[in-house]
Image (cartoon, rainbow, N blue to C red; front, side, top):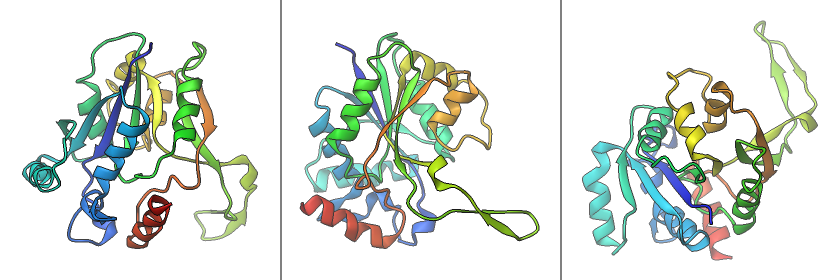
Amino acid sequence: MTSVNIIIVAAGSGLRYGAPLPKQFCLLAGKPVVMHTIDRLRELLPHCRMKLVISRDMSDYWMNLCEKYTFESPEVVFGGSSRWESVHNAVTTLSDENDSITMIHDAVRPVVDSVTLQGLTEAMTSDDIDGAIPVTPVTDTLREVFSDGTSASIDRSRFRAVQTPQAFRTSKLKVAYHLPYKQSFTDDASVMEAAGFGRLKMTSGSPHNIKITNPGDIAVAELYIGR
């Protein structure tokens, strides 16, 4: 059976969220967001090997939270100043098992569902791909903005919104994260593509798999958890 690693990225400062704490530590239905995310993945992938990436500055705070909520923390890896650096630090700790899969997930997506994870794991049974990424159709109308300030509508049917977790061959992911950082690295799939591992299969994501970005998203996530 192929082993699965999961890296949960929770090292962001969350400055845009506007709360005193990084959003992954804000309360959702009575406990921190990141704990919901961990519990959800443990429930759906009980045999996975999990690593939690947090800021070194938040280490003591996280340990205190775990004590307060009687929560068992996954193995902790300290992150860096960017998401790329945080994932890099976690990837370098992975063992070199050629057949293993590594999923990378945002800590602030606490309501990932079984269908999304099943789609990823099924896709990764194929030897013809380097990774799999969950996507959803773009429903909003899109406009492209040009340097002179003008804009034009574009065909949204050609685009997909990308979610996490994203799944990759561990051996190839480790090679990809040896590349020096580039500003074009917006997610893990873009790092893989830059390393020449561009055989990435799109799988079905879920509109419920929201990323908590604004304070109002907490209320939406609570509705999904309540269901």
